[in-house]
Length: 294
Figure 1 (cartoon, rainbow, N blue to C red):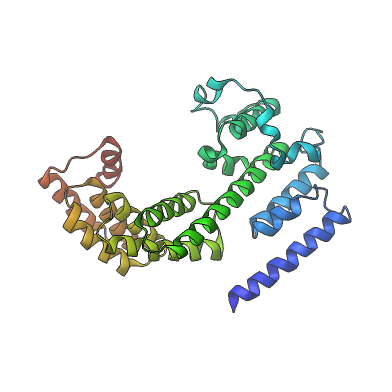
Figure 2: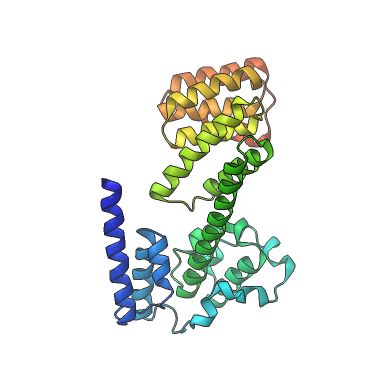
């Protein structure tokens, strides 16, 4: 009932945004209606932020033409960039959104789009909240495009899986891609809920076939914890212990599980167990455990 009500409210708000754009009350380009429609709440918020920025000339007086903003036309692919530019600015790339000039910010966002936007999802999400209107336009449009591409691929996987549900290769590719989509944090609301439930179902089938790797178990546990399905996470951890009790991922998952339940004393006991067993830990794992040892 609540889902239907929220959907109706969203559609009404989207319709108001459409009317506002057509009547030029909202000073944004026509295509921003689709941002409001396909990104519940955040899309409408983005449209309003852009409207007020343009209204008060927060974009340094630069009028962004529609032609510049159509990523579908692959404009950004025609931009010539220095191949080493992104690599040489890995650390300051996010700082540039704050401290650099408008020209440099826009140059960086174009470099990211021309390179491989999917590798810079976190950067694009931060860029979507920038005060520079043009940077926001490019970042939001890029994320919408990435979401659309993900949806098309997920639909294709769903079709292939439904035709051959016993094909382990398809199941593996399906779960791997679905997890990568969930990890991008582009899914919101009910869409994320449904896809996390789907991932749980698919991964459960894969693990029942005794083909799950330690990474599969790790992703499955993380997914259940995101859904607050602590019983399901506990079952997975018991299975994981039987198969991978010498792997760092198992212990990291146990710590995440205990932390989610607020069981600090059990975490301390687990740290002692890890030290006693002399479990091999990578530098990343050592850093994660050090947080709980302090």
